[in-house]
Image (cartoon, rainbow, N blue to C red; front, top):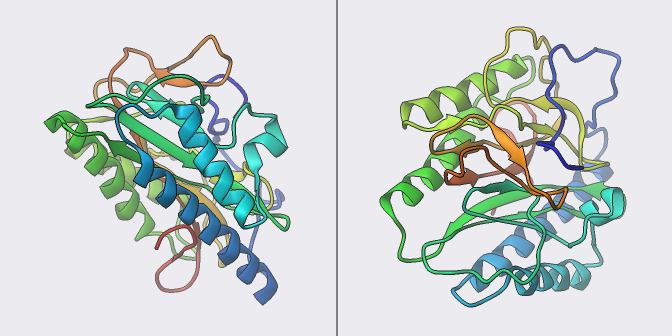
Length: 267
């Protein structure tokens, strides 16, 4: 999360001895469900408030109030001293946008990213909201990010190669004519925001990690209209598409298990 293009650093070959967050007990699962629910409620309340004229600081304050209402804290503030309770990124900004005085306008793409911590557990989710009137490009980009997420999530089974998920995201994004932002990735989560393994949004044959039963990951397609590269903005936090093209981000925290994965942050 600190500065340059860091959802997390890109991985090549995760080492087997690295400790991943896995659900090992009913206590773990119950706690993850609770923080996942707070994440979902935070995004729902913020999404309902997105409209022309509201500032990103006002949206962030709504997110803060939901977390505090449930006894949760902002994990980005806790772990990284991020200057906001949530990340709010606009148009070409893809991640880690700092809430402030910027006013939401008609036609904007607004990415809301909430990562609460509750009782020592963390969940992470993001959505991109299109403010009417919505251009065909903006609508298609949002639909693509969401579709790519579900294509990959459907493959999250114990024993499956982690690279399978990235390949599924990349194929869907390319099929729809857009680009994966290759300098950003998903990640393990559960106890901290960013844990191993890195969850790439493209196939990399060097990644030999296999998914395990109970593994907790944040799967998050991060895409742009016309570029696969990013740039860091002067605030030291916000990451944008390199060419200024529109971006979209769709993320949920899930638990790998036999059968369908458990989406902790989805309704």
